[in-house]
Length: 230
Image (cartoon, rainbow, N blue to C red):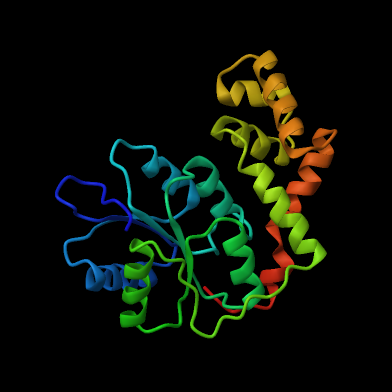
């Protein structure tokens, strides 16, 4: 069973979803599972990371994949990189087996479709808190194709980056120059160059451009294009 964050064994969950009605539905479900639960809301990945940087630890994060400030699995990867010990359960309207398989390969502690009943959602949360990896009842794992295997390998390499290196990588993706990155992070250009060198080494790529291209594949917009989840 996962350890509770507080001395009085009161569970503490972070709900990350930009849809107010579903945040309320999640509140209701987690209270069904844990009546004394302490829940905190985040409406973006940026807000979630700011909350997680605070002094009080969390026992579980419930994450919607479709967030306004990220693409595809980027939010999950950011949470896993910054907080590798925090179990993150994806609660999503995207229910395709391939999406579930990839979410699990990127380190999700479970996957709960938004279409399930509140009682089933509560039971799934309890299962994860008891240490299980929860997946939908009718889920059948799909063999990863070459593309998916490459993405999973890149996700594994990304998990080796420090939070600061991940921030530098995100700025590289935005097209910022070393001087601009140094200004944003309030560090010297030499420090930025050192971060870039480590990023290239850990990702096993040879240039900034190649790093951006390879990491962009993780956004995987095509995988989500025909899904109707919110």
